[in-house]
Image 1 (cartoon, rainbow, N blue to C red):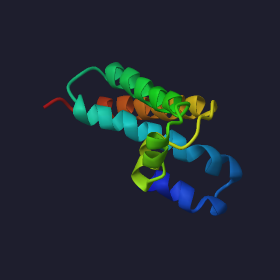
Image 2: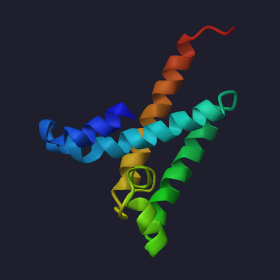
Image 3: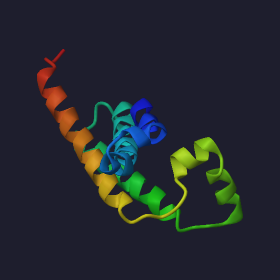
Image 4: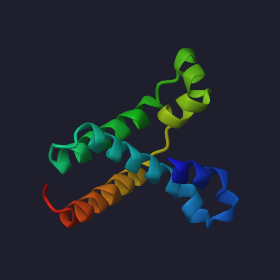
Length: 115
């Protein structure tokens, strides 16, 4: 979370490409690891599929522009969780962030000896 928020707060100090894409990819990676935390004993692909589904549903929900949900999105927490506007490239960012987290998770799990 700190990295994702920092990528937004200090975006002027980062290369433009990184500043534009890193925050959403890190948000999606956080969603993946959240599912891993909740579903720790399940297979990795379940967290992968659930995190992709959740992230994509959040993005599609941004097409819905009712007053009440826009008021929620206007809050700091609501904006961080629900986003503020539909952007198709976010699907790519989420896919890359979740895929990166999945690969990192697989690599780390291979190195941990069974208990």
